[in-house]
Image 1 (cartoon, helix red, strand yellow):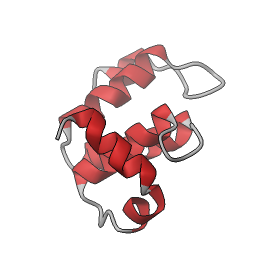
Image 2 (spheres, rainbow, N blue to C red):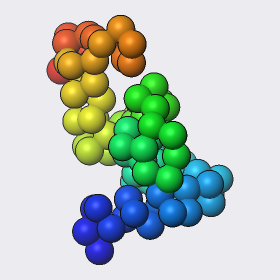
Image 3 (tube, rainbow, N blue to C red):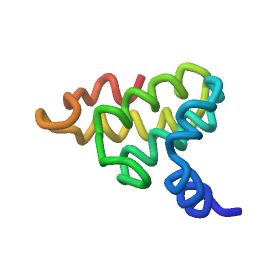
Length: 88
């Protein structure tokens, strides 16, 4: 399955995935994407960043890139913009 198909599946079964992700970096990243895009859950950039941080700490490159984007382009209503942190 492609990335978008995973998001659709997780979005339709979001609560189960959130409760059963067992700190797996890929699931944490995908849960963050669901929050970012509002798939199966109310859209929330702050929750997306929370899950991206958990995933990025485990070395997930997609989560690290997503966090970098937020730090480079965030705003005061969502995520604090911090370009220097975005390139860490």
